Length: 328
Image (cartoon, rainbow, N blue to C red; front, side, top):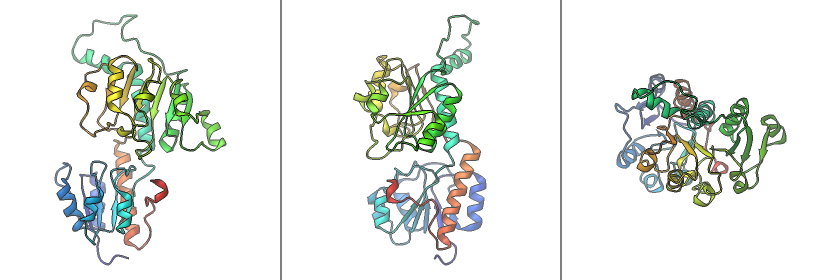
């Protein structure tokens, strides 16, 4: 149980409604700009706060946590992913970690389908032609892409978002396949009309589109490595709205340049905002700046979950979205 108002430090600008409510509830330190904090600034914030509210852009490792001191008791992450936080080190130091699961599911699934359409229907090429004033009128053979209906979609990671992607893809007439650490319950699998592949290699070799919806963990780092990417058909498309580290980005870039994979739609990248420049040059690639959860509704709901986690902790209870060892 905490006495008095908790000292809460927020590392990035949040929606105004969320910042206003935080200011009403806590002794909150907000950002006047929206730039990432340096390691030194993050450590200083941890030393001076009861609660830190970081985002995916804040990498909090063991050495930083070792300098946090005794005051910090909760890291209330603004976002569902927590691979940027050394949760084990935090737990060893008595620091709880919470996240905001569920609220970005539908928004991210929407963006996944948008990327599938953008790549297969060559939307960026058409937009570029229009914006440059090069369009000479309709032609029966120009801008030919392919329809989604009838294609085999292989979903890598069938959690909340993967299942939401499957529901949308079914509406487009796609065939749903998936690889997951655990097979879905029979009733869930039947409801999605989804086929489970125990072997990821075998699934990849047969899919027309592969959607990455798995979190970044030690076991999923470069899960789509050069060897597995080479199993895919040359007509296949890769879409990633999850974590960039799941794909070997250099290998993917080489294969896209060589025509060994038909296209890619990427909202996340292996090295954050530092994108392979050769990837940006490719006409068969659609790149987005991590927009999967970028809706007003979703970002406010994320903030509301952060507030509930902090308020529940302040009242002496376990935060409802506590990250536990079984999730790592």
